[in-house]
Amino acid sequence: MHLRDHTVRAPLDLFHRTYHSLLRSTGEIQIQALVEQYAAFEPSLHHLVREQTPDLAALTYTSLRLPACIDAVRLVLLGQSHEVFARHGYGDVLAWQPVSAPGRRRKIFFDGHETLAVLIASPSDLDDLIPILVAFQIEWNKIHTLLADHRLLSGLERLRDRVAIPSDEQNELLAAAGLARDDIARLRTIWGEALAERLLRIGQWKKRFAVRMLGGSLMDYERATLRWWWKIEHELQPICFSQRPVYFVSSNTHSLINLLSGFALRHTDELLGFIRARDHGGLLAEYQKIVDEQVPSSLENFFYYVQKKYQAAPASAAYFEQRAAEERALGIHRVPSKFYVDVDAQVIELSKLDPACLDPRIRVEGAERLRASDALLVNIDYPLGLAAYHILKIVGRSVGELRGVYVLGKAATLNGKIGDVLIPNMVYDEHTDNTYSFASAFSAADIEPYLAHGSVLDNQKAVTSRGTFLQNTAFLDALYRDFFTDVEMEAGPYLNAIYEHTFAERYPRDQNVSFLRPPFDIGFLHYASDTPYSKGLNLGSRNLSYFGMDPTYATSLAIARRILRQEVARLS
Image (cartoon, rainbow, N blue to C red; front, side):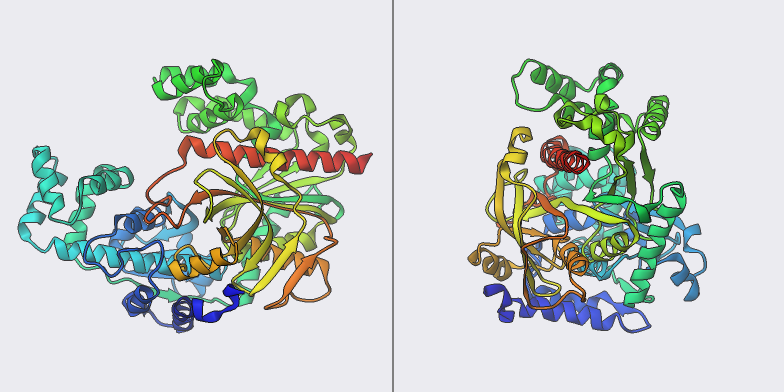
């Protein structure tokens, strides 16, 4: 098996071991110390890593996963909870300015000067964040070198100060910084009006990140996850989790609730009024095409998308207050993450759902029997990498019994296109070198009726990667030679936790594990957001936007239907 040939992964493993060993130090670690080993393995998301020419795909990808204040940051602190930061003399970081990144969920706090405090849930956060910092620093310093001419900095100051400069002169100015017309448009998309100001900062000083690890033991990670779960139990005290059967779902915070409450579908007039008032011409045109059956898109999915847009409008407060009240009446409870693992949760009492309110696509036969159910649906906003293991392990041992584990998430595809749905029945986990095989709860037939724009590929082989940047062409080729076509980050950790729910021992290493008789329903559904074989084509250069609703809801519908059917059958 090519994936167990460690020569393929040797450069990746060397970089991985280097930063994990350095982070054992109690002092600051300079990111510059990692640049050479990072470049040596030639990451697939950073094709121009060794070139003097800026790699705008890599810069865009990393910019979307770092807060805007990163321009001022010198020191990045890493810890599992606010208590860890306090123990190391940094006071109450929760009183610092909370900041966020558009493309990555993390609890991050900025001291307003040069220090960033990042709460991490597992070593996977390191495998994600450290390469991002390395890549961002490399690209920053490339552009810094190109902006060495004081005339360029003067021109950027004029742009920043809104001095009228002809567009041709602007393009010439930015071209001198190694930025082509398409690159400028891409940066304007993510940096907006701050483009000139951020380029000016890049030109003024060289980036020299340092990181410092606070804590980092297995117990630190488990303690943070346990306290995250205790908060959920505390906020929902009337629900006795230890006596209830649970269907566990790892997905997102919107699709399942929309399907189970049907609130948006009962308020379509207000949602249409919103897009008419805001003159959303593109959305109105799309609505008319769906009504006229000129496009195969779903009208229900369209209203769910508009509802998400509506949430940002000040006039929507009454609408969402009513939604919250109706959700509570339907036994739908939202528990936002506050202090620890940055994973919001939702707990749904199946007995309180109203079959008449369900999205019509999930109204299964016998749904009225759910009134007698004692089961819960626990849905979490999908975590990153190894945090999945800690979460499922703690949830599984805290509830009466697990009835099913269903995971919906993004993936890279080696044989499909963006928007396709991949259904694996085999997973190789890079963290443990285990290969898991299982009978999936889902097949293509469960998704195809609801997917308008992509294909469904079942019986796929997935690889759980340690990180999006921890891949290169040799690694991807080795995957494809072994017919692995689905690259993601959570399935392996979830399966390691499922192993411990099945057998009386800790998960093994370097083993082939077959769940011939799984203890409960298992299903993984991945929708493709990246195509690594298309150089530079990833969510750093494209955004699924409205069309991301298609695979998201097709897979969410399959999960909701499966859970309702399983529970109706159990009650029968």
